[in-house]
Length: 117
Image (cartoon, rainbow, N blue to C red; front, top):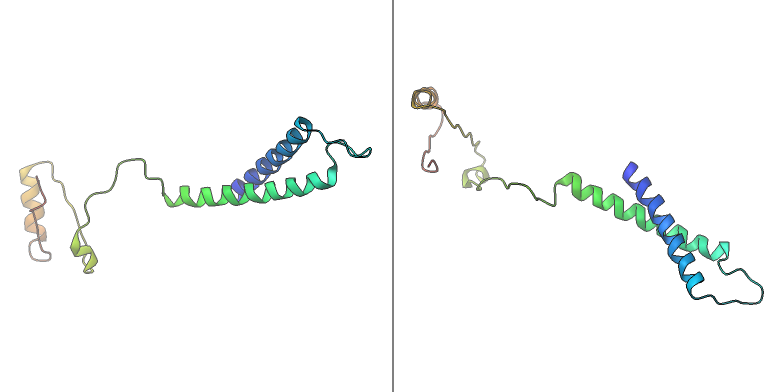
């Protein structure tokens, strides 16, 4: 929620500044009217506020979903996960711990050491 508010405020300010700088860069004096009238500028400001809030919200959705995966990637996909099985990876620190894990799990699970280095 705060991202949408910040995005809306920044979008409104930037839209007002763009419209204001444009009207002062290319002034069109028309019958005594001000160079930057408030009512037409409020339309640009409102639209910029909406656009900023929308872009900030979409950006936060992508960030919270972890879409720009810049860090290390996860390992390979194991086909047994798609079959509804549970994958348990154990990386023992010594051979004796490896044997203890193998003997404890030998009767209950399928042990596959083909992916080990």
